[in-house]
Length: 239
Image (cartoon, rainbow, N blue to C red; front, side, top):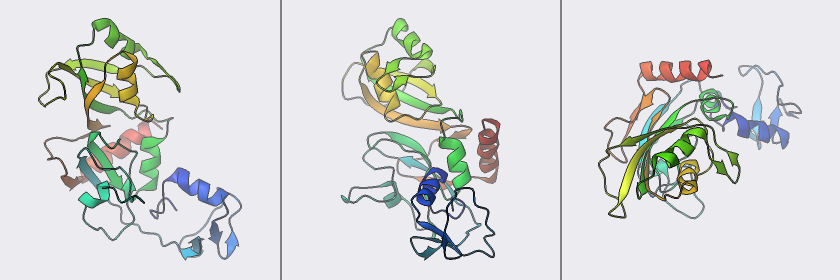
């Protein structure tokens, strides 16, 4: 079902567990049931699932103010408002906070989504971070070693000072380049708060071997075949 673009692999497992998936008219009782998509009739909530073998891989430079979801019941702007219709069910690989900018991948490849987002895989994510004030070397070393958050200790991060262009909400700010492989909710913001520095602006510039480059805010492009092969290769190496 993930291959058909229904949802992420994790969400598909939840659908099976909830009894919402049928194979040839029978409720699937196991997540590991083997099927032949060319012969077996698969339905989710009574709707037939058709295997779409053509995969879509889009890189979007998400501006601040957009939600990283396919739809919002409150009518807020989502990343889908920035993309053309593909005729396929596509969804973001992971999420960026509403106020976070930068690189986000959109695809209908459930396997790749799983490989890039599951905690057991160590795919680097690189951010430019503008923080209020100037962190000391000791504070940055805390980030490099890992800091304690309410949901546990973070993994060691790669932290470098940067000379970044861009405006901040305060006249006194510093710019950092932070690389992590975890994907906890608002992780970078919470890490910086833990050392006493509020994030003023946050932008993701790289996921694995894929770079944002000079793509304009709100702009998108399809990944090249070389990029697709590179990110799939890295995901497999980290499996």
